[in-house]
Length: 184
Image 1 (cartoon, rainbow, N blue to C red):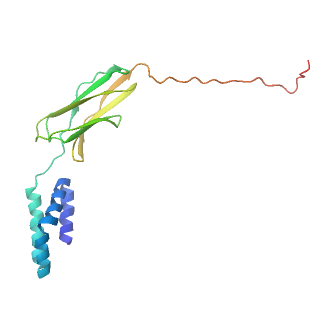
Image 2: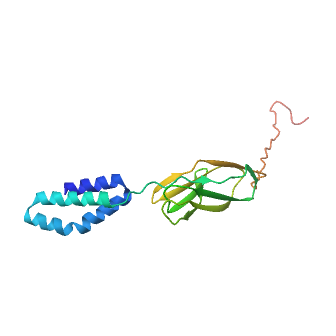
Image 3: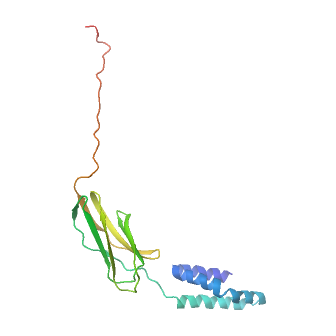
């Protein structure tokens, strides 16, 4: 049992997909062998079976690298308030991702799915409206939960904001001086 736990922990440390494969192999493919060996009391063979399964799964399972790093295409330095901005990104080399998302000042703006095809280039885009102010964009390309983030691309939105400031009114009442005779 200890050997299975060690193999599972090593698998998790090696790669999340590999870990899932290891758990599947250990639970489903070696269950009968382990049960027979335990019933016969041959614990030396049990250790060998677990070792062979672990070695098989480390050798036979392909390694998954993190996805390549994307870059955001050229952005205008300034845009007017209310103007839609199309954000294009490309990942020219590296392992393909299966999903992506775009953040504006660390808040997700849009996302999408990708079709992994080895190590060929990937690209996508989205169109969004941005409020007045500075915007720092980053695109993340992901394989499962493992993501690679692009460098920050910045632009500024200028113009009037649609939020108007409500004016504050301060009223001051005249004070009555106690020393003044009000009958005069």
